[in-house]
Image 1 (tube, rainbow, N blue to C red):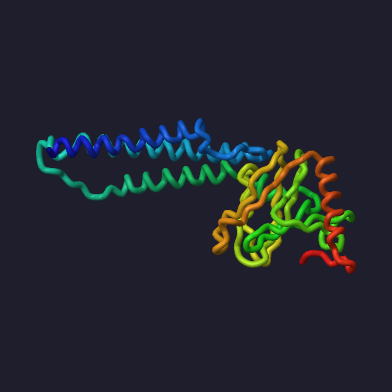
Image 2: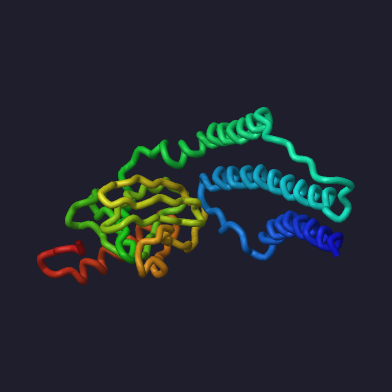
Length: 261
């Protein structure tokens, strides 16, 4: 009976890496994986993700195989003598401390260029749109026909973000109340919106289409419904859409021209 229990537990530990690898292998084919990447820098971020996944995957598989081997080899039912105990090894402790530290240092250096592209090398341009997070919606403010934010002819919308494809986009991100997170999964963009701060976010889409805009930070009871959409269109289509939105807004404005706060 003890021998059967030992076999069962050893095989159970062996099943963990086998099933784990199988899940990752099958997931892309059943569309349970990363959303489609349509951004210029998305391939760099995905590359980092896959590299870290492979690195941690190897460690995970090796660890589980070692657990399986030790449970199988040192099963109580086939032990030939009493167990022996050893005290800690300072050399071993130093080694298994240094190795993870070296790996983390390598990852920190390896990702620096990608981090700089996404978070440091801001394009020299005026903001394309101001995005203001508010429980529980995304308030959008486009420059008016004068091309400047903060003037009376600005265009105001909610949850319906339109942007030009194949062009640098600079978003001025703000929050009106609590901490939110501006998340565009298909563009591999995620940035916290912090109250009292104006945070620049930039990216470039490579494909037209409509994609998700969601909040990735628990921001209150209505967090689940804080959803919008981002639509990428060609420059002529974007300009035509802006003009149509301007006309619609002007048609609904009071005579004194006051805009949405």
